Image 1 (cartoon, one colour):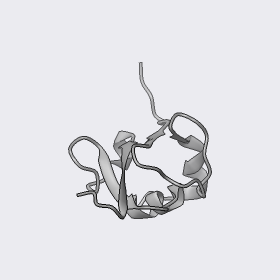
Image 2 (cartoon, helix red, strand yellow):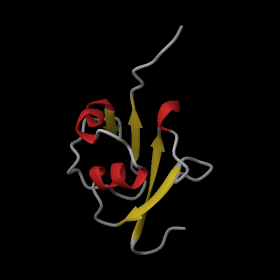
Image 3 (tube, one colour):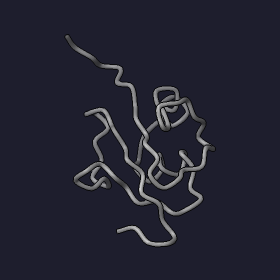
Image 4 (tube, helix red, strand yellow):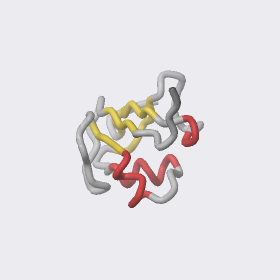
Length: 83
C-alpha cells in the first residue's frame, strides 16, 4: 500500500519474469528516490546490466541509475515472440 515515502510504478513483465511483488493491476510500491536498478533488485530480475537494454521507462530508454517517479511505467521487450 502506498504512503508518503513510496511511489507506485506500473510494471509490464514478459511471462518468464513474472513476479509476485506486483499487485493485481501490475503495480509495485517502491521507496521514493529509488532507481530502476533498485526496482530490478526488489523484483529479483536477473542480469540487470543485460536486461536493462530490453527495458523501457515510460517507453524510452533508461539507465539503471534513472530515478523512478509516481506513476512511471516500466516495460520489457520479450526475446521470445511468436506469430
